[in-house]
Length: 289
Image (cartoon, rainbow, N blue to C red; front, side, top):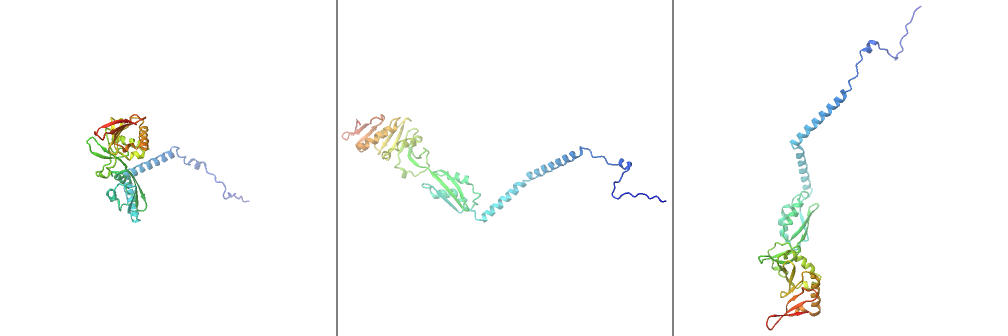
């Protein structure tokens, strides 16, 4: 009788001997993985810092940006974005030649790189320009909006010289004053600053304002006006508008300003005192109206 050995089933579990189990590798320590991750991060940071320092020290970013800007400027120039025309709005007394002198160097420039604030500052150096606004009109035009000064009087300074002043009491630096000889002449300490305020208070009687030939500020408190270059009108320090309305009403009713009058005293706004010219003696006489 033969005894057959039972063959193991294919694919069945394989048993390891105790000796094989004794040579299995132990698991890695727990601290190893965090250490590797930390070293990797530290190396990456050091590499990034070194690269950044190199870029800064060599001005790589600046050179790259400058190259890009240069390429963009060249491209826009070839595309027709150059200053070819300048439009000025609000110009009345400012000469066109003076404007050209301030902006002639911008013609042909790339319109995107024009120094707008610089153009504005140069325009505001002109004597008649109070403020200027500069804007681009693509593809090839600049738009200038000017706010000019408005002359209101000739100011007689401490030396007796006449200077043209605007509605803010600022001197307009022009030399040709003959064309403004019909403006009233203001004088007295502080008259340059206070003149605009005076004229604003008198505007409600335009028929009289047109006859003002001069104004003198007395002791910084009140004004003496001169009408038609011959009549002195003494205004009060207070309630000026009421006194001015009284004179206007009297003129409408009596035509008093067409008479031979040397002076009118309005310092009491309830009545006026008229000083007539005595044609026989050349002197003056007083009369209350």
